[in-house]
Amino acid sequence: MNYAVIWTKKALDQLALAWVGANDRTAVQRASNRIDAKLGMHPWAHGESRGGNDRLFFDAPLAVFYRIDDSDRKVYVISVALTK
Image 1 (cartoon, rainbow, N blue to C red):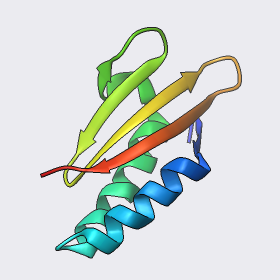
Image 2 (cartoon, rainbow, N blue to C red; image 1 turned 90 degrees about the vertical axis):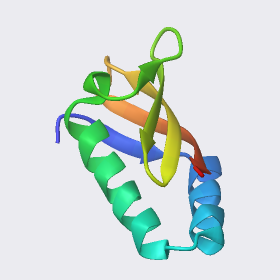
Image 3 (spheres, helix red, strand yellow; image 1 turned 180 degrees about the vertical axis):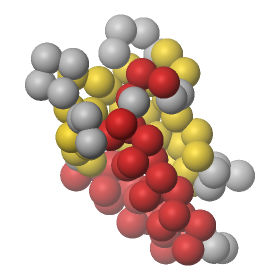
Image 4 (cartoon, rainbow, N blue to C red; image 1 turned 180 degrees about the horizontal axis):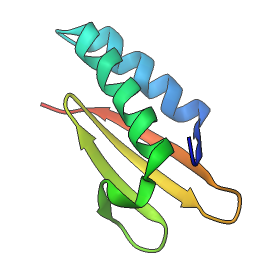
């Protein structure tokens, strides 16, 4: 991976709640794995800009808000939500 993907405690807690509340828990797990892989390889190529280094990325059934730190080659997943 080109970037280290770091899920904040808040994001991990939200991911756990999304998993518990999901109709298809396997889909949540697969989406989180895809998000991890995609953001680790090319964080600028995914999602929509939210100003500066902040981006919003949808990979059903999840949406993640993340921040890219190019100087440290890290991506911080700040929050996660289950999409409808």
